[in-house]
Length: 301
Ligand code: PMT
Image (cartoon, rainbow, N blue to C red; front, side, top):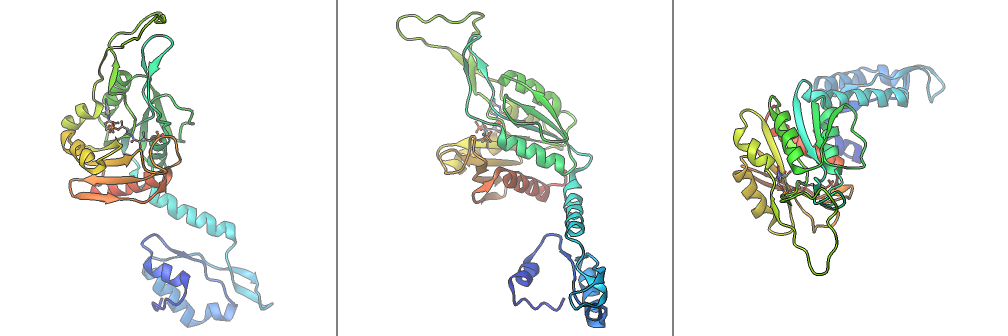
């Protein structure tokens, strides 16, 4: 309350921008003292949440009010504070795409990529935790559906395009994390293509660009795309921001350690019309959290 910061806990508190809860614990007379009570009132006025101490036997052997609240009660209180923050997207409808698309050549073979869906699923889960109504348009993955998320399974880029464009109508925004194939075989063979002597060429054609379609059409929606590069990350990703009329691009370099496909971590750079912000190596859950914080900082959805 007086701003003295001579230990790790208090320096942390003075720097904290998150909700803060304090659970006072001391002997009954100390707790009842006007100095303590005034300090608690000062903290409460500044927005600090007070978890009241319990009554009962104290360390001194005396009986009274001053026992630290039960750890379970403190944990439940803090959980409540976090949920309050997280329900900030209640009533909003968001679309997330995740995972890899599969472009069939014949009943046996396909063209795809290494996306596991982890990054997109983390975003969908975080959005649902914050109270949003989420449609997750997903390529094939092994991942369980995050709690509270509506999941639409697709295989090809064309199927993902149909599902995502349909869901985007009437939504408040989208985060497009899927690794969508840019090319698909021009012809699908109903029967297995038989092996012959010599080489084989498979003609491919462009797939429909989901972001390239909804970007120019968007009205009030917030549109966040991803960008996967192996070189010139910022330059190439900034070009996507303008070309696809996006509000934000989350760029990742597949060659960075701990970044990209399959792993539980990522290293991303946020690119917005205002500039770029590099984030350190983080878990995909924390990256998802940071993306949503950045979106909400830029726009109330
Ligand atoms: O799934 P994980 O294993 O966790 O890996 C995460 C990830 C590496 C797949 C993810 O972090 C990521 O980078 N996703 C975007 C992959 C990608 O396709 O990037 P791109 O630069 O090729 O495409 C740019 C944007 O256009 C992306 O938002 C993409 O979803 C979108 N796109 C691409 C092609 C297409 N036909 N339609 C699209 O909308």
